[in-house]
Image (cartoon, rainbow, N blue to C red):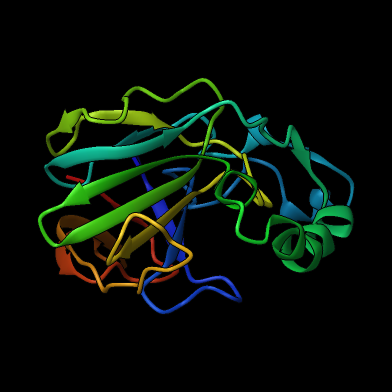
Amino acid sequence: MIGVCVAYRPPGHAAHVLDVAGVTADRARLAPVSLWRGLGSIRADRFAGWGRGVVAPAAGTVVAVHDGEPDRPAMSLLRDVPRVLLIGPLRAGRNLAAAAGNHVVLELSGGFVLLAHLRRGSAAVAAGDRVAPGDPLGEVGNSGNSLAPHLHVQAMTSADPFTASVLPWRVDRLERLDDGGWRPAAGPVPLRVPVRSP
């Protein structure tokens, strides 16, 4: 994801599977409004990550693209948390479009990567396309079984996330925010710490 973001491992996700949410550069917030407002409703486009560019993490080949699923236009903690965490996985079953929404699957030299919950109509690639690191793939959205705009990142042994084993992955170039400002970092993506690509 382009810009400042924070990675999370939500409940139910396997090790090495991350959700990456865009945050504001100044205060590292998910949205310019308090999430307590989410007890009511917050429009998806108010989230810092909404519409941010999603780029290829490495050179590879696009093996699958799905675009056309609607984005959830707003979120409400009271209404959507039970629906997304409890009901959503049961409804989605093994339907990748229902679970991942709009998505791209890339074949890389060491396996495959699923980039999910893209914004409807934003897919910038087609199956068979070759991509280089940093090539545009789409934009962050709120499609599929998603509570709020974010990018689901999953490295795996095959193109089918329902049968593949999850693989560990790392980032070669990253900056991490700490008390002294932005510092170079590499390796596994740190959780709950603002990061950005240099």
